[in-house]
Image 1 (tube, rainbow, N blue to C red):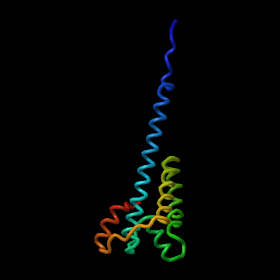
Image 2 (cartoon, rainbow, N blue to C red):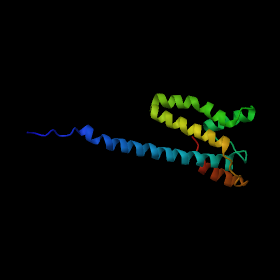
Image 3 (cartoon, rainbow, N blue to C red):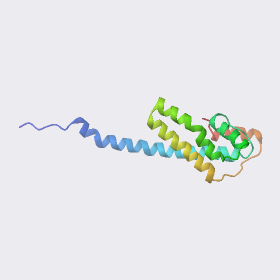
Image 4 (cartoon, helix red, strand yellow):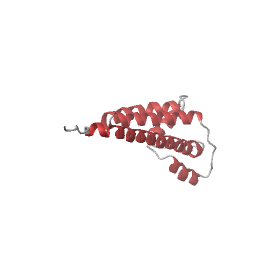
Length: 135
């Protein structure tokens, strides 16, 4: 009597689940580190010394300076078209991670306070750019 061999897809299923779970945990940890690094660079160096960044954050800063709309709300609002474009071009997984990162950044900017590290313009530009890697 011949024994049936286990199906290859059935055999690799538990391993695939473990690999996927590890990947999501790693992505979550790295996104969280990135959020706090960007918030520290932004609030500890750039924002407290009135430096303006480029990209979507720079647009958010300019609109925030001209209106009474809070910066954390503008960061989300200005990035929505880019998230939608990322969804269309890169896919849903990319768009979800990007939306979570932008939402986390906005939440961190709204709630976490960082000290003003230095007032030296050269150091502000150097370290602010190091911690706040622009879009």
